[in-house]
Amino acid sequence: MDTQSYFPVQAGVGMEENFLSLDDILLSHERLPVRTECTFPRLGYLEKSSDAHDIAEGSKMELPLWLSKGLYERKRRVLSVELPKVYREGWRTVFNADPNVVDLHKMGPYYYSLGSQMLHFDSPENPDIAGTLLQTFIGRFRRTMDSSQNAYNEDTSALVERLDSLEKGLFRSGQSGLNGFQSWEKGQATQITASSLVLNYRKRKINDLQP
Amino acid sequence: MFCEKAIELIRELQRMSDGQLPAFNEDGLRQILQEMESLYEQNQSDVNEAKSDGRAELIPSIKLRHCCLLRNQRCVAAYLYDRLLRIRALRWEYGSVLPANVRFHMCAEELQWFSQYKKSLASFMRSLGADGLDITQDMKPPKSLYIEVRCLKDHGEFEIDDGTVILLKKNSQHFLPRWKCEQLIRQGVLEHVMS
Image 1 (cartoon, rainbow over the protein chains, first blue to last red):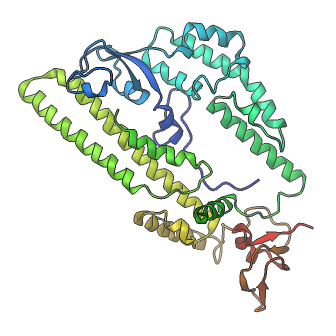
Image 2: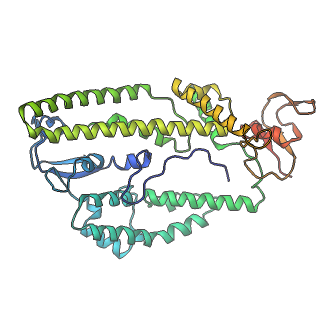
Image 3: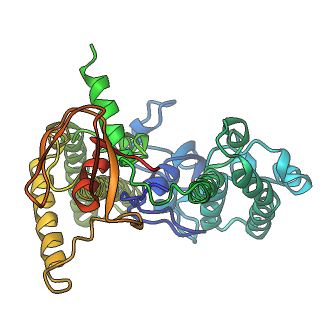
């Protein structure tokens, strides 16, 4: 197993985000359908569809998650956030029926994380959403774990393409554990190898020099 | 929408998920700071107007701009911090002397941070045991004192502890002490041959 030296900040668990995590920042960039409950004077230029000077009350817009979270207040004077369709009743019954069939990469690559973040907006459906997220994960986990532990030295793109980003991370850890074990079995665990980081830098340098 | 440049910086880092260091995006950083300044100024004037004329309906807009300022701050902090994590990894993978093409990708403050990190690591290593312990060696459990290595490219002359000088030519094989070769193997100059 190649020793790791670069340890990025991990994504937060559940409803918490890690401030410095690159994954969490990219996750919170996802857009949500929103309805304003008050006016926003002098910010009309943010709405591409209208030429108004202000954003009127009751406008429907798409705002990124970070902005929706920042502006949302429980007393509901500012924003009301709609659930994206993957978390609504219709899709929830599909997930409850058979979680393994769904292509979670297409449903937004951050299905679990975004779903957990949606719980911040006090929708009356929160318990159902949370339940579905959990059951979907449980239903799919077995397959992800099995495939990551049994796919050795082969092209895994078919296995990985329908996974959400959280599941992809789990798949990668499984693969790295498998590869480490296999190399130990072959007696390669004590062989000093070139650092993969160094090799990647060299590859990049050669590519830079080529016209 | 605001904070588009900030997310671009983050994407730049995310693209290199193996830990490589991309060039320092000074331009991008400057644009983000300019955006923050203009948001702050707009907010200042709105706050003054809200306080003096009692116009409370400006408050949601002030809050929105404030969220954007916090978002930009978060992205910049995460960008700089992640770069430092990558630079720290360089000390462990490359050793204390970085190749020129990597140094070009670091800004002046990052170079300074790297040299201070090197010093902290060195003084820590010196404090261990009787005459210090090099913890950047033996990343994998050693099985023998001497190892068989093959040269992958010409590296010139190499002196070992008893004074003999070895010429490292491409494809030559040598039986050398492990502690002398580990650095060169990790840098891809030598290859550890298992019998």
